[in-house]
Structure formats: C-alpha cells, structure tokens
Length: 275
Image 1 (spheres, helix red, strand yellow):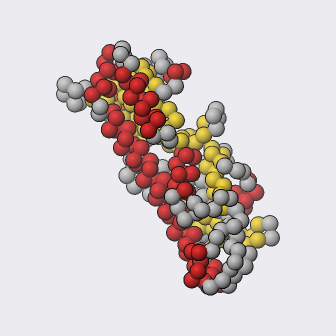
Image 2: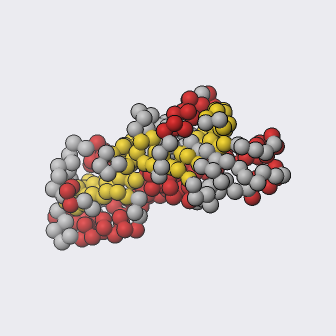
Image 3: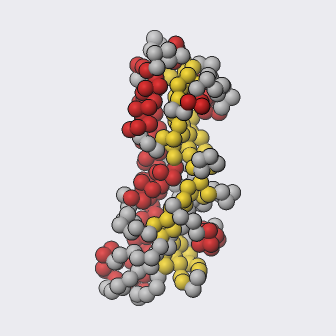
C-alpha cells in the first residue's frame, strides 16, 4: 500500500493523533512486497515527523492484519456453509434448488464474495450465484481438483478484466453425511480483495479522511482495484518498497514522502497471500 498525506495545523508533536490528514492518501498493493504507507510532510518539526512516521507504520500493520483476518474469516464461513445438511443435495444435482438458495443467502450476508458455486463429485457446477456458471465443467480447475481430493484450497490473487477486480479464491470439500469422508462435491468462493482493502481502511485511523485512494496492484503492474488512480505516485514509491526493509523517503512533485511497509503473514490462512 502506498499513501500520501499532508498535515495542517502542525503544533506540538504529542498532538499528532489529533491532527487531521488533509491532503491525499494513496494506496496500492505491490505483490508480494507488502503494505506500504507514504506520507507527505509539508510542515512541522522533526519531533512531529517522528510521531507521524511511527503512527503511519502502525497503521499499515493494522490494515494488513485486518485484511488477513477477514480473509481467514471468509474461509471459515465457507467451511461452515459446506458442512450444512443442505449441501448433501449435491448428490442429486440440487434438484430442489435448496443449494442455490443457500448460496444466495451467503452472498447477501457476506457481499465480499463475488462468486460462489457448488459442484458435484464429477466437477459439474450444479448451483452458483452466477447463472453463467451453472452446468459448466470445472473438473480441470485447480480448486476443484484440490477440494475433490479432500483438501481445502486457497488460490493466488488474480486480476480479472470483466469486471475489473482482484480476487482470491477458496474451495472446500463437501463430505457425505453417511461417513464424513467421501467427497460428494465442492464449494468454492471468490473474495473481492478490493472490498476487503476498503473495509480495512474504514476500520483504521485513516477512516476519517475522505480523500483516501485505494489501489490493488500486482507485481506485473496490473491494477485490480482502485478508488482513484495516481500512477506517478505509485511508480515513485515502488523503488523504495523494493529496498531492504521496505522503508525510506522519496521526493515527488516537490514534496517529501515517507514510505514504510508491513508484509502479509498468512495468519489463519493456508498460506501467505503475498501482499
């Protein structure tokens, strides 16, 4: 994540948390470099700067941890719904439409899921939140193959073109009620990573600033999610994020920026998501 902000009404350093961020905060994901926060200081003394840099670094760590916690919670929800008795209807290709109803309820309750689908044991999609997926053969999908073997699957961050979103997918096996071992189908869900980033920002100390830009960007340069684009700032900060420690300063548009990073850790997940 990259951020830029200007301080106004600079005063006593100990008042940092009461000073409003009045300029611009920009953010992006440079996978797998980490969460990077950058701020513009247009006034104030070194003591104020020290407090600000410390608190901004803490904010990046908080946002990164919040995103991972939500991903872990979404995976937990998927496992819980996969264990519902109604999922046994995958044996009869959801003849009564109950599985489709549950998927609709899950998506309504957890809107960060962009897609949800259930397959039978052969890999045919029998229920989905997108009508285009129903009947689609998914036997060659990596998520299906993993879940069909009885293993929970976590995919990489993927940039989609239509609509333009960055997602991370999970798949869980559906076990037969008669022995809790035989896999009779799979349940898969794709999570909108951009929605999680926005939600994490809203829960952070940055939430009160209305001029916040969030951008999800892969290492290959593709942008997956953004509230506003500022490619010049993202490119300028990228070099600092690449350095050892992922911290430093840059000069951009006649202003000084502080950059710090907080890498993802994969807590509660199958593996580090790499942001």
